[in-house]
Length: 257
Image (tube, rainbow, N blue to C red):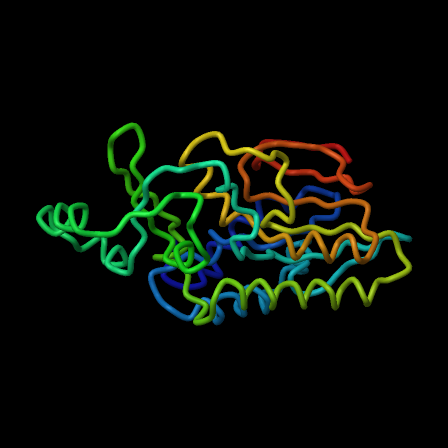
């Protein structure tokens, strides 16, 4: 994690791909924006202004790229909790503003919180609960704290719904610009999930931060046939509503389209 945009470190990293002859396209991810300071928007702007082309890379967050009759459009996307998989679970949870100072609470304060805070069912969590990005859940008789660490290291100064709208608008501008071509959408965050059920309490909670259905709606609106995304840390290839979706796993993973 960096305290600020480290151009030298980024240059050294990109140089490792200097001999790769294929076109190199990328979108940023939420971890690229983790820092100990506010003003995530300023850090994102630093990435946009970086001379990626000098290292043989093309940043889709900045603009689309066209190869023949195919246009690659995209950006990091964002999340608005609309992909959450919470409807089947009734774990007792505590979701309150007091949790926002969890890292500084002592043992007595934690015990008092567990004894006095109101509980609700996991399936009844609302957008305000997810916006805190921290939750206490009772699982197998024990209370566990669940965290989404963007809470600590990303600060846009706007809500997640507003940031989703921002990146959605940026993507639509690219799709409008390249309309008439075969369009491939590349996102970091997911526009759709490859499964309909969570694998446990942590998976159910983190699903809220996987992406946004609004990107899927836009993809369908523009009749896009191919989508590539990351963020889920799991490999999946599937077709839904005539759209081929590729969920990439990691650096060492290759998917042939």
